[in-house]
Image 1: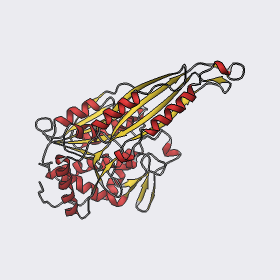
Image 2: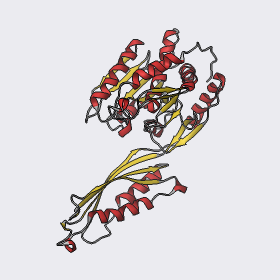
Image 3: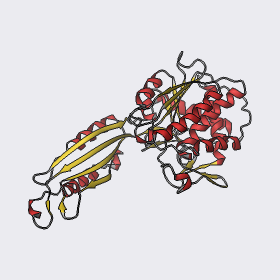
Image 4: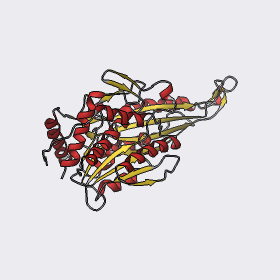
Length: 380
């Protein structure tokens, strides 16, 4: 699979400048207008390298989807590059909790690590090839989705359709644990649990009430007890809301639950258990909705071969590339679960995703971009 060639010099400052242009356009998932401002900038950059850009209008309150095709894309299987334009950081983060800043090798910014840095270096690698008059070995399609951080509900159908049209999928999610790529991910499920009781005056008629928060407390303990680290299963109750006033026995309570599982069999089992919750207290109700959002996948033969190819390229460039699994999910879950060889975590190295200390390492920019250049020119 390897075809040695000299890689022209890449300019780390130019790469960083491009990343920061994207970082300075704040784009939280739930703000369609903000995400579309980000899409406008990415579209301009793509048109600058003569890519054929399709823009699919957003729906359900989310931003637009961008699909950019290089020469020959769509006519034969090639390489699909998955990226997302949204971040978890609200508009105003740049002026508040996380302004862009640089301290030696560390560059801070909201979304710089997850995943505007990675999305940009993949684009820059293709632009570098265009500048050098070189073409990728296979047709390349880029897709930029607007709501990965909240489940990719509007873009999943496009991701899966495009994945099945291509031979490989490369994902620009950030590197893990010092530069590792991701070759397996858990599946994820989202559930809402609602308990209902009966309201009453907490002082005058307490005995008439049926406390929905108390019932939820029982359910939370049941849910959390389903976690089984030995089986790589976690159940986490992340949000609980209920009640109206302290002097009213609460009639309703709501909880949001996160499920992570290693495979389809565990997903089926855990969905059945969570949806099978029953009331503990008398005269109370428990209602569960939701299900799996992303399927899990393990490192199979196709992923292993793709990783080994990338590892050999990294060695030629001058760094060691290792792989790891992740409890986090990405759009790569969709393509890998379909059996399309998928290599994830090809973005920048850094740390602090989703935090106010989110950062990339400047020293990772050139090596990681070189790896993208080599992947685009050697995969066959």
